[in-house]
Length: 404
Image 1 (cartoon, one colour):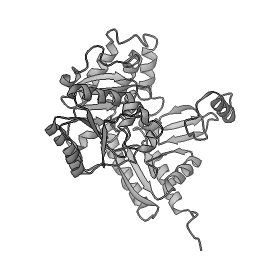
Image 2: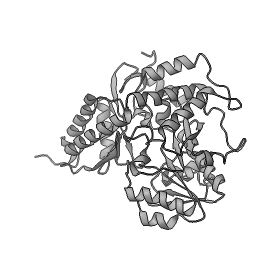
Image 3: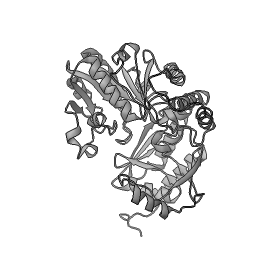
């Protein structure tokens, strides 16, 4: 346990850190599986998982072993040299991705991956226009932010934003058909909108996205930063729709907590980037790649895609049963262990606070949706505990509820 109490730590934050985050009143010291322990050793159930990052949970033996084995040997060299661990991770990703997605470029984050993917499409097609979806989220670097269809994230940064982006309603097939043209370099989509509130598109929409981009000679980029690597019950979210994009981006779960991202495409498309055309100092360093390789190996060994699919269906069915009669809940939706409970008004934020009081961590996406993206190894008892909290929350008296 820390010698500093929470107030001491908060004061250090105020004195020495940017105040650009709205933080919960807790500081964590260590974790194990789906549990986090604060500096007072109080245990919390983690349904956030670092925002879909800690797919294997906290302190997973495979991640710890990879770090402790690799760190004493080599942490960083440079992409000026060949890196064994990087090559091995590229091979591991190719083994789970459908053909022709077989070549990777490693970066440090999802925003970097999306930034690089958009640059790749621009250079590869020689075209000037891009298409993205309203309500999307692709990152906070300048081009990734330009592709993000939520003005609240762009406000104040307009001089840095690209004017090359047009936006369509996510899920609107007819608008999609009319918006991809011979000038479109790429269409970038999430297979499920995460930050936008766990919005699942139709089969028709995603298949049309693939067909129309092929017809017009544009590239289809699928942002798998949050959905990728077993989260939705498949290795990749796009697999639910029977399509294969030209480029995908990965991050979050890839490193199991270590910062790493990837752009994955075909060999042909990858040749667009020649030496000097794109790069990164830290991307693909030996330590990050060793950890990511261990994460993928563990996901295969523990069959976490299949587990997420099964547990997700069971959990959503239970949540729908609990919330069916409540006027406070509009919908329970998602795929695998990427679940959203959309609530009326401020109820989602109220539930987040209520769950926090019960030592359960959830967060809110899209303003009104409780987002549940727990570690993929989460046990049934933990899910049941969240169900009980939801049931208790919905049946207790609320300010607008008159009691007799």
